Image (cartoon, rainbow, N blue to C red):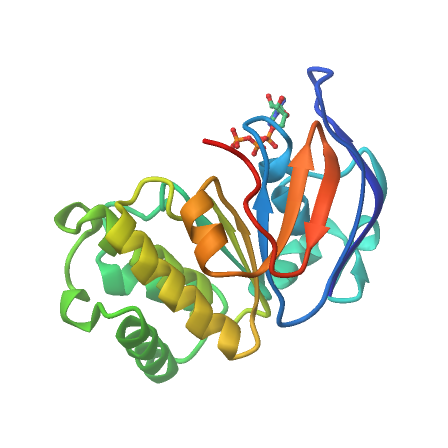
Length: 228
Ligand SMILES: Nc1ncnc2c1ncn2[C@@H]1O[C@H](COP(=O)(O)OP(=O)(O)OP(=O)(O)O)[C@@H](O)[C@H]1O
């Protein structure tokens, strides 16, 4: 599913973010990525959706070797991967419904299918009654639920979330985690970079810890392992 072998990433400014990472993540796993600020967590997850390219090493996503993936085929890769950001990245002028439908319109789904799938996913995240609202009219937690809905409406095989609860209060964060567990229970792989000790130590999953661009720990049902 996600296979990396001896992956290095040095940015154009000379900063080496990853120093030889190898990892194997299977379909259906739920994995937390933890580690100090600047350790390389975001770089690690960005490699998975080809936001950044490795300087060296091989990466397979869904059996496709990334270096062999032509630029014009990247949108096909992205269809299999839903991405959720800390700052939501919703389109401010579009309604909740339109923000989610947008992801389907670009892949030319029929209007009838789009309507059904958007309403189904809004039901899952508990926002059916806010379909006509624009992002500014929603709380932070609601906006994050919209961004989750947008990420999963295509039924991606992998969901990548980079600090999805970073801007949310604890109660809302638990709600977001419940949604992730539901998506994971349907077989979707979840990769979540987080600084939340409480979440990692409560909802036990595989934990990959990154420090100075290296994987220093990889545990089944692991602990957060840092004092914050
Ligand atoms: N686009 C970029 N250009 C240059 N350097 C970068 C870029 N993105 C990240 N870096 C550097 O790479 C290193 C790893 O950054 P990364 O964002 O992957 O860390 P992180 O573990 O996600 O940190 P945080 O927990 O603070 O989000 C840092 O030293 C950072 O300054």
